[in-house]
Image (cartoon, rainbow over all chains, first blue to last red):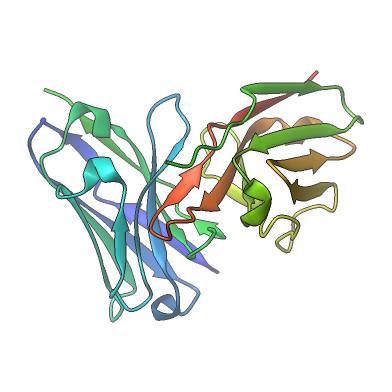
Amino acid sequence: QVQLVESGGGVVQPGRSLRLSCAASGFIFSNYGMHWIRQAPGKGLEWVAVISHDGNKKYYLDSVKGRFTISRDNSKNTLYLQMNSLRTDDTAAYYCAKGWFYFDIWGQGALVTVSS
Amino acid sequence: SYVLTQPPSVSVAPGQTARITCAGNNIGRENVHWYQQKPGQAPVLVVYDDTDRPSGVPERFSGSNSGNVATLTISRVEDGDEADYYCQVWGSSGDRVIFGGGTKLTVL
């Protein structure tokens, strides 16, 4: 079945780095844009970044520009989010989601906690 | 930057109709998408492109969009519809996604 599975979450100190992965299955991964969307505890959804199907277009939330990098490996059906210089306000559940204009499939989320 | 405004909460009795609004400047010119999120779960798409429903979403869920307000309507509300609902657009600048703040639907 169509599925997205995130991994790589955890507890990290401010200023450190973390890389999230999102493994896709059940659809032709290389045909679709992919997004990262986050949700701080008890808060609403916040879009983070998007990458086009071929990796040529990438857009970011202003507050993560220069710190986060979205990428993909279509040969491995995997999406990534490299997060550097993490801040306490980056603490959230991070979801990967399939689509470009809207998101018809979401992963279950990976929890990232930034704390000293 | 473009802002989508949703009421924080909406309450409705079982069997009645719930309407959740999403206000934005000339939002009628945008394609609006809606998501349902139950506690501890990932969001689920319930309406896309203003009015379309993904397969598996009950016909009780419908959407409309005109002027400065988009609306998600849930007819014959059931206990299982209790959730947070978010509207979303692809920003007109073409380089970002925007979510509304979310509405908690309570079934009385």
